[in-house]
Image 1 (cartoon, rainbow, N blue to C red):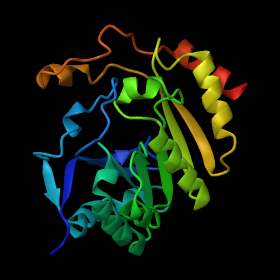
Image 2 (cartoon, rainbow, N blue to C red):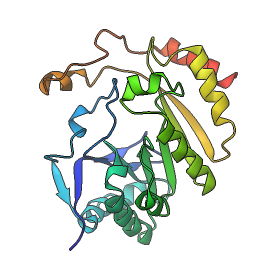
Image 3 (cartoon, one colour):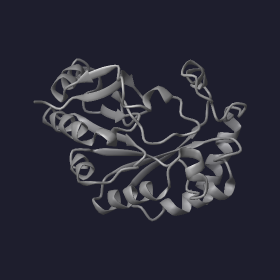
Image 4 (cartoon, rainbow, N blue to C red):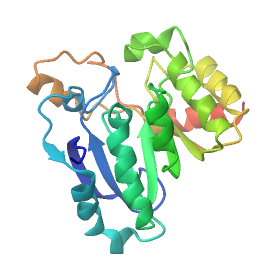
Length: 238
């Protein structure tokens, strides 16, 4: 019997989730509770919108292969795809048979043999580092920082190409000391091809109301273009 993946949704023409045009799959289920998450409807593994086999999911992707071709590919995001590592592995195996580039968008909060097997079929990892501050990380996400850093160490060990993503939140992750610390920390990783600082936005706040959940960052303004430029300047000049 084939594995069944729990999927929240698809995006057929993603342009910010890896190189080129991407077919982006959002997994249902996440172990983090990030204060600025704009997809709280992906947290629970229960009641996914889509139940699908790796083979059927590949057929969805193949409908758009002509558009992304060799410059683009497939990105498995979330939620947290590592919570369904075996399913994602089987799906990525099918993608590789079709010469489709595979990217994994993750917080790196899990590391086990199933995850290691998945990484064998992953061309690129998009690692979302929430903060390099070990005291702030559990407040911001609900989990400790150590798992993500161990995950990054393993990516270095297996020489897996990696892009780093980091959301800059006013008054929380925009501190110069933390941005400098992250910049310095990442310098030792030869696998890191790109670091992208992303501006915080409150676009998903309405979902919390719909789910009867409190939005932890209510009242925090979106990061301005000028603030993002300043954060990038600090990061680059460290």
